[in-house]
Length: 112
Length: 121
Image (cartoon, rainbow over all chains, first blue to last red; front, side, top):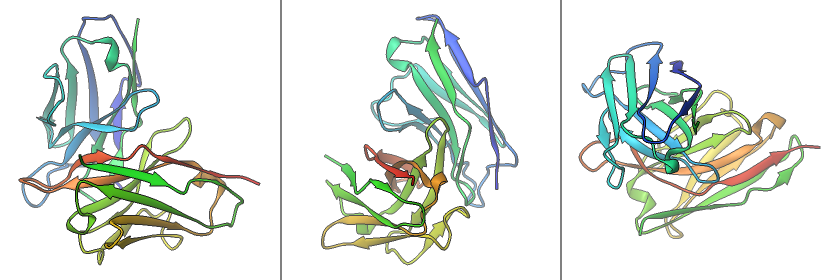
């Protein structure tokens, strides 16, 4: 199984400041079709998860443009340009290139 | 509006069975890959099973293989997760997830609100 490793596991951030989460996979996430199926999932307190970004860097409709994803191969990053109060919660990277699909351990974003 | 609503979560004893339902609205489940993901209390998200659009291809996580299965009722536009031989470590909130393939696949665009399964004696 592919292991997804996130750092940091906790990220206290000042409102209005940037935040960054790293995700590394134990092997390349490039699919045989040439795509890399790496998503970022947000779970706010008391809410179901929702995917913010798919295929490394594509934002879903309605996701603020302060969220951006980057990376390639086995090394990926989620960046929030200016953290807002509503961004508090858990963030997971998820790979859907190979079965079984796997998630990172989760990074808790909180406000200082 | 595209929506998924799970139900059926309950308290069950180890070794027992439970069937979760995921009622879809705003789209037809028969045209989509559908997935179940769980969140274990105090831990993270774990993918457990996927069903392709016609329901003939099902992929399971090793932890549930042979115990959990997924089925569809197209007339009711509902996905089911049949869980047998439940164990304490199956305790989790279970989410039903739609995968959108318009343009590109592997876009998990719709998640239900979740249903809690507690396995305890």
